Length: 137
Image (cartoon, rainbow, N blue to C red):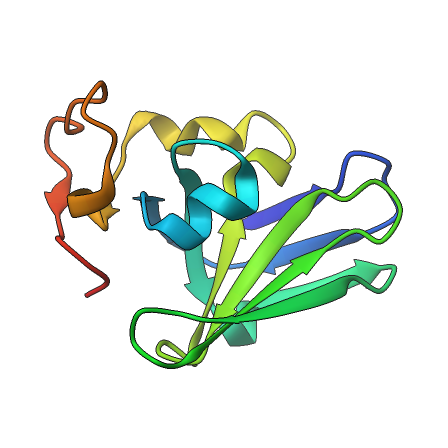
């Protein structure tokens, strides 16, 4: 299956060739600060399946709770957050689901896992059927 996506202005595009992905919500403070929201909605794919097809994103590195680098990639023109590479999880890319084309932001109607539930705002309930992780992994 091929997934495609882009930033808001279309200056950065990407493609993912993967048969499956892990759908994940993350409530960590880093994700909250990065998005300005309560969580990020993500598809986690093998790094070898992810390819930029247009443009060059900017990056911003932050040290996560693990003490390892979280590298955030975003469009230098419109500012859309696109994906994250976690030093803690070097074999995967964490693609921001809202940047996916074709309605894929709905994660096929299923969330596999919720990370950093210890930081989930109290007004949000756990997603039924999703694995609940206090932190990452």
